Length: 322
Ligand code: AVJ
Image (cartoon, rainbow, N blue to C red; front, side, top):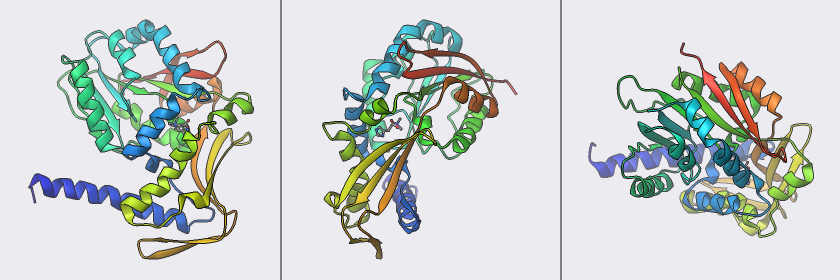
């Protein structure tokens, strides 16, 4: 079984298995739900890249501007010769600003759930930066994970941009951050966090006029069809995203347009007209709220940066040495 083909097969089965069991569990729940991490197959990751470039979607460009403006200071805080670990790396675009600002980074460890996408992006990064050691890790970082050991006296720093932390409810975020603080002991982590703001701005960002967010939301149904042989009719569902101020979060849903029956892996699921699948939460924080979450996770919030319109924030969190 050490044949590479067999290993690849086994890795595929494990991933498809997790999607299958989470899909069956989510469709059996009331209300129905699906974990948002399953948006990110290769097509979903590409759709997300298109979202980042939409005029209504302010987080990406605002965070990029913050990174560019404060790169030198962030580079100093991270320190020279660091191993940079990125959680939920995606297209590996934002990190280049940091790599430029870091004094001779020892290595770069991008972690992403989409193995094919990660491999392709790591290949391109290596071409752009032949001197950089790149160690991609295909993993779901919301589970416990082991990082490659690059060498003695290694100094790890984390990068968790894009407000991906917003996909986790605060209690889950604390669980993840505690784990990260352990992995990064003696270093720190830069976290990008979307801020509470005028709900109209939030609403527009998740209801773009080009319909890319709608396609991204529905991609989870297409993925169930192509990977697991389900028979979802994506046109039978409406994309519905709204800001819930009491939870300080955007919720994304797929709402059934009619009564319908869907078959998944030999099971039948009934949808009544107007029934929803809750596909994503995207939490928004104030600077103070997020600092409190970081403190409860064993980090020391040492520095933060916010743009002039108070749309988005970057937080440098220190991880104590023990
Ligand atoms: C990648 C989780 C930060 O919540 O804004 C974008 C995902 N969903 N449009 C976000 C997303 C719909 C995005 N995160």
